[in-house]
Image (cartoon, rainbow, N blue to C red; front, top):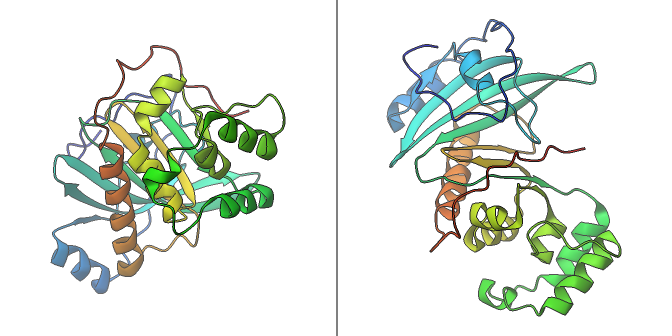
Length: 255
C-alpha cells in the first residue's frame, strides 16, 4: 500500500484481493486547475488495493479497476472521490464513489434507496411540505406500524422502526440499536428531504457514499459530490448520545 493512504477501516472478512488493474489518465488542465484552486489532490493512479481493502461491502459492488481520484480534508475527516469500475452480469458499470475516514464514525449500517413505485407514492403521500422534521418524528406507533404494513405487508416491522425512512430506503444493520446510532434523526431527515438516491455504508472509522445518476467526473459534478458527502457526514455525526457500544455481530449481507 502506498504511503499516500492511511489504513482503511477493516471489512467484515479478509477475502483475497485481486491484483490492481491499470488506472485511467487525467482529464486535462481544467480539472487540474479546479483541484488546485480548491486545495484538493488529483491523482491519476489511485491504489486499487487500498479501495478493495474496504471490502466486504453490503450494497456496493467492489471496484475491479479505477479511474481518477480526488482527495481532500473535511475538518477531522479525510475524503477520497474516485471513479470505480466493476463487472455486473457481464457488463462493466462505472460509478463515482466517495470514501471518508473519520474517528467520529462509530457504528454500522448500510442504506440503499428504494426504487419501487409503490414505496415512492406512499412516501409522497405521507410527507407534507408544511410538516417540520420534528412533527414527522411524533408519529404514533400504531400509525407507523400501519404504514409499514401497507408498504411491505403484514408482519413486517422494519429494521429501525422508522416507517417513513424505511419506505424510502432498504437498511442493513447488526441490530436496531446500532442502526439507530449509525443513522441519527438528522441524517434520516436530510436523506429524505433532499430526495437523495444512492448507497450509503457506515462503519467504525469510515463511510462510503455513491449517488445514482450519470458517473460524471468533472468540476461541477465533483463540487456537487463534495457538497452532498459533507452534508451526509455532518448529519451522521450529529447524534446527541448514541446508545452503547456497537454490537460484535457481523453486518448482515443482502440476499
